[in-house]
Image (cartoon, rainbow, N blue to C red; front, side):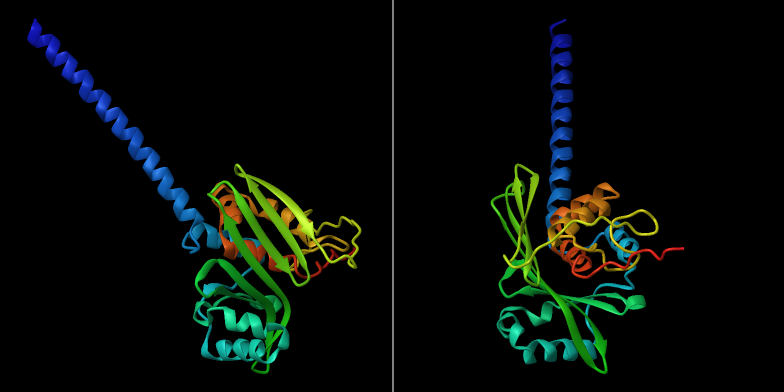
Length: 251
């Protein structure tokens, strides 16, 4: 009888240990997934698909061709506005995103020795030259994964996103001379922005456009996490808000 009680006790103990081991394994897997999502490298096919569907991208996160690299580098080096930026970014980190239908190219760079800071330019290639139409800056300063600040600039405008216990608080940073008025316009399908790559509505603040586009991008759990953790996704959304949307044609 005593041996039976010992056997039953050991059996219960073994089941308890297995239960706790399973819990620890599940939590560990969840943490690894979260860590992967907050990493600076986009490697999820669902995320690529979400970006492509949203912005009709023909090329996503690819290395530039030699001609593209030469053209972009030349423009940055010969434009006074970008001389300081050019010396601070890592040229070898250049990645290209393209919407060939609308002749739009987004070029993204990491800063030297700082993977939490990226610079992006939006423009198009013309006769072996790259014409810049917008520039964007991303900087993330996190205390932990739930708290910190993210700043995204669009030329002279900027959006500040404060993370407080995982909650995002948006505020807009503008030059005093810039005034906006709200004028809501939807595209032919009832979505925010226009019918093409450019998404900022007439009179809309950059920060308001970014917030609306980010929310609209969140059509899945993975896309939502990417929109909040991936610099490349955040810059792509910012780039779409860096130009005026084309309103729906009146029929």
